[in-house]
Length: 128
Image 1: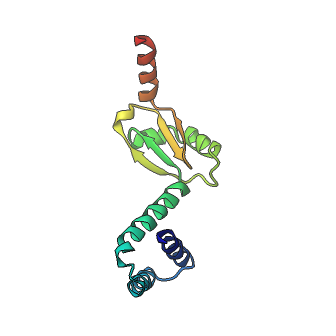
Image 2: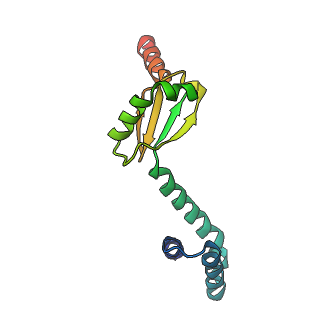
């Protein structure tokens, strides 16, 4: 039953209806059917699904700092195209702990060319 409400809300939002009117309609429907307690659970599920959909649309590139992007633009764009993206747009995430290199994530795939990973693997191979 809850999944039916979630799917209905997602369909209405996809058609372009105003968010406020969709949520008001959902609240009234739940109240008329005696399902008010499902409201927060439905909203949580809708938010989780929408967040998952939006994160898949654009690749995320993790680098040490902004200078790292400038020096590796061609490599980054090459790996982004290998992951099957339509364009060369991407979000940038700064993580100083990767030491250097970059990590490209898109559509639940990851290409890790960070120095942190390479050094960790080297350390593990030496200490075994």
